[in-house]
Length: 80
Image (cartoon, rainbow, N blue to C red):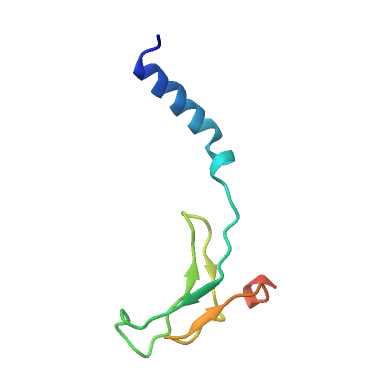
């Protein structure tokens, strides 16, 4: 019977080699709502972007007003 540490080693190696296959997925942003609760200077426009797990930032130039719900339909300016 294999020891517990050997089982963990085999599982760890398997997950490290094949983690991209099991965990990769397409992420879709359906909606976003911006609040002004943490703004220090009211005259400065916030830099709004979407970033997932260390990937490149996608800036959202269409998001301009606080306290407004934005729904994305795949026709935004950063997708052209």
